[in-house]
Image (cartoon, rainbow over all chains, first blue to last red; front, side):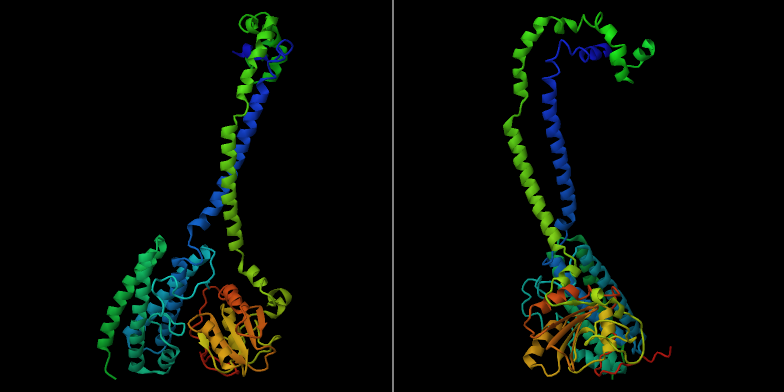
Length: 223
Length: 257
């Protein structure tokens, strides 16, 4: 075995043509193979680089629209809950307000982290609610379904005692109904697992909270 | 020497070739291999064999296909990369691209201190874009204030990521309404009139300012888009639970602390 290998190489004197035809063929193969590997690696790298962008929701996607709008919707719930938390006399109302403020602020954090992961701005190029079909006319002075008006918020700030608690519960109930409506829509529309999951939990937990609100309201003293 | 090298031809082929290889080549190796290579006539018949080499040459069909598919893939993926890189331009770059914007983070970072101080503060710009400020922030839940507010609170709002739209006191109502439309219902936005403003409208975010003359200027939307929340100094800080009253004297929170 080894002798035959050896013999072929030193015998360049008589087989001068022998090595000549072999290398060109090999050179072609090597060049093309190298080129193919290099291009293949480059394409693979590029595809890997682009995949996160190609698979995450875009700026005008249903998911991005929902996240931006629901973050704003949530922010107002946090605002109302914080107003109430400082002056609630009823323990159940104080506890409900804390629950709403903490839960919804936490969800805002989750949603804004997703936007950042997707390399999207907190402010979108599309109008509010544009992601939702047949949502024309659902905005009133820039407010989405269920959101309290500046006048209602002023009234909540000014109110005291049971009056404030009842106003808060009413505003929160309306707010939740609007939020559930938006969350149910995105559950129908999205193919994104995370968005589907979070919106699903919003629907379920806010429905439970509406029941709690109705019970607390019925137990508050008249006044 | 010959024994050791013969024992390891595979390990040290370079040594084997000239030293040990030459000897067995001529007598022993001549039998199997020499039969084909030795006859000088072998050179003759070899030449006609070269057409095999021709057959080994490029077969243009597959090559063209390979090149075409490769070029197409490079084109598609290259365009995708271009779009991604262009689309993922940082908010700082987009802010820098707004005509007339002043970036005090670059030109005067020293004035952008962020200590909590009670009482009135002096600011280098009107309206301010940053600096020491009151413990309480101005509520910036899309609040549209119809009278001047305290700088000391508004600066705190901007520290939280708010964009503060200000307009010259006495601006026509239709212009005010157009601005209010961009603010209402949007947290991390607030708006108020300011006395003695050099232009009709001035937009502020932490460290940034843009002065424009009309509410129809499309740079207003670009400013909001680039800087709202993005300009925050405290990610995830909120805009509610702030001061909702107007008046340019800062309020002190009576927490007893």
